[in-house]
Length: 146
Image (cartoon, rainbow, N blue to C red; front, side):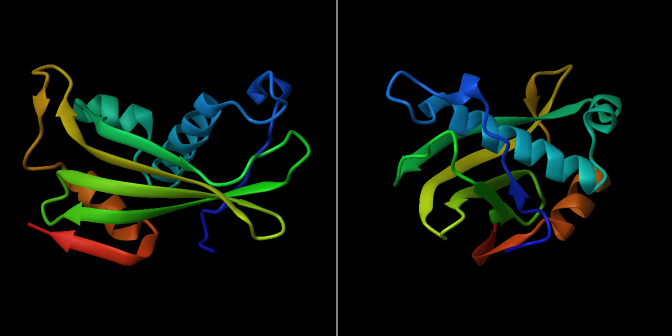
């Protein structure tokens, strides 16, 4: 567990016709948790706006391992899996874990930073981004590359 692990608040709107969490809700949980962590580390949406940057995802994948039901207590654990040395590209992993420690899903995203005005990938990255990623919780198998 890391300091940013969070218990999810499952809502009726997250449930599908099969009485378990709908597939797209998993992606929403991951996206919200990523933004929560970035904000806690000092990279709020307002700061991104002022810097003229935003995150962009190239890949978002969820591996569903076990069903999650409305009454389940789920913790989401988010870690940085890969980071390019200049901070311009990243991979983040989310694990959704039931209270009995059953791993229910793994979400992996690969992304980068885009210049909002120019609609082009940003490099070099503003210092605020590199500072945040230096504090972001790292996976046990974290890899720095490039």
